[in-house]
Length: 345
Ligand code: GDP
Image (cartoon, rainbow, N blue to C red; front, top):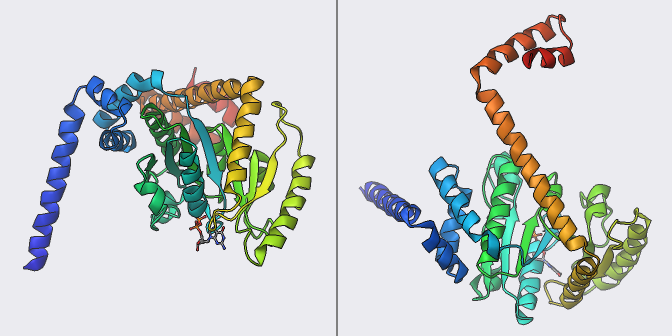
């Protein structure tokens, strides 16, 4: 009996949500865009839900909203943060975000979580995170988007980032877990990439590959407190030496390292200063804009490639030729290269 009632209740909730969603989608784009510009969070959240939806009608609406807001985007500092689970990303973002707010900024936090597709559970999302920050008037914390491929999640995150910028958030933090491809994905959508590490653990132990260290603009040894402080200072010196060994960047930026205790909120101001230094350096020499432009072109090419692929696979003519080509390759009648040529004959 009670479970029946519970089911009915769930159904009623779902119906109400659906109705709310449908009436939102029917609103004129200009009205939604205006509410976002004014900083209305409910509208922002609903628009991000549209961006994340895989329904075609939702996506179309999301596209029109993002387009309407494009002139108001691009003015934030886009900061990527990575590090293995447990390094203290949530704790750090909470401290760092509050510090940004104390300097007059508005902070949005988004997450790219590559785990959700594989394990169905999220590494970043399921714990209670950033309590104080998420309740703050000047902050917006969005739980990680689910998705079954990293490319899709990345696109959603990028568009969510644009919406946050239009809503006036001038610090957008994109968090990801240091466990795979997602660092490169996030690196390609931010201005500055920050790697959190621990002292006293070898690189292998931390699961951080050399490539990830090479991507970092700023390296922060976290948990530099108590007995760990001395070790953290030593680790920082070692990393600073290692960072100097990497090939110099085109922008002339030499990656910097520092240490902090996110938990005790010590040294977080130093990280903030480094991000500002990074910003000044790149804005002065033009690399800030150059990086943004090349990111935009990359996104365009990615989108184009995936559209071309979708069209290719959707066409019957090519499906037949594809099947024939595979057969001939298997029978050793054609090389893969000749087979491709044959498909496009
Ligand atoms: P995440 O998985 O990278 O998001 O890590 P969390 O922020 O959830 O932190 C993992 C654990 O490390 C938690 O128990 C935190 O309280 C702890 N922690 C985070 N930052 C610090 C720090 O600066 N010092 C110490 N001692 N503990 C910390």
